[in-house]
Length: 229
Image (cartoon, rainbow, N blue to C red):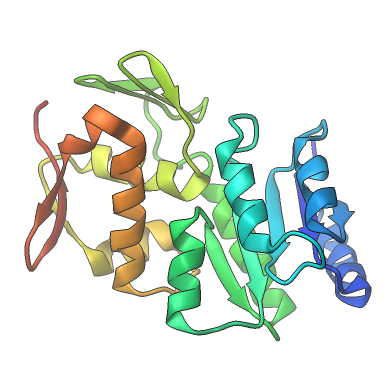
């Protein structure tokens, strides 16, 4: 089945351009022009595989839409790329803090956006998966099923958070610098800073609850996943 991309933007010309290019790349598309439409379209079956979300919408801000998508268990793990004219670092940080997987500043290269979409969709299933499930203390990670549980309770992670956790688990006991994580986890989406890594790890720890203690901060170096629980 073709992957489905939900486009959320009130600029009809831009939506048409994105629909054309996404269809040419082999994706199916669904469009929404307001925040209210976006939330309804995200919950609709079939569920989108990724959402392109403009921040400046006529009714509900893209920021609030993203928060609601992340708060709803049925949509919490859908990757979100924010599209915005705001390019300041603080705006990107806020976007990542509320759960965006990537942040693209207008005007942007359509080709670059296609590459970012492909990179994020690849993260949904890490290529080096060798087993259906990995258990570490109270944490269980099912890579093919893209599921994480802590003490038996399922935890909703974004595609990027899932890949970040899978990378740490694969390299447990070894320190990972922020630059290494940016290269290995963020792929071609390099318009991020080391502060972005810190933001995502903070969110990941919070979501993992008691399993968050497995992620250790090594001051002045980076992060490490414990060797043993």
